[in-house]
Length: 72
Image (tube, rainbow, N blue to C red; front, top):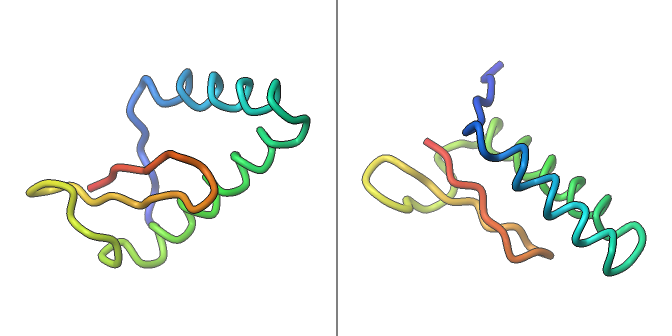
């Protein structure tokens, strides 16, 4: 199974986004995390599916939130 390795700053970015969504509507932050985890699973299963973002990176756009996962 492919292992995901994250940029060191991503933990703080996800935490801040989660907290912001939770402040808007209780449970919305949880929805954000669920969608993010689904994106990670999809990337692991089908990494070449999403379009190239640059020469060596690809981008998965989340459906419900204005975020994308950039990966290589």
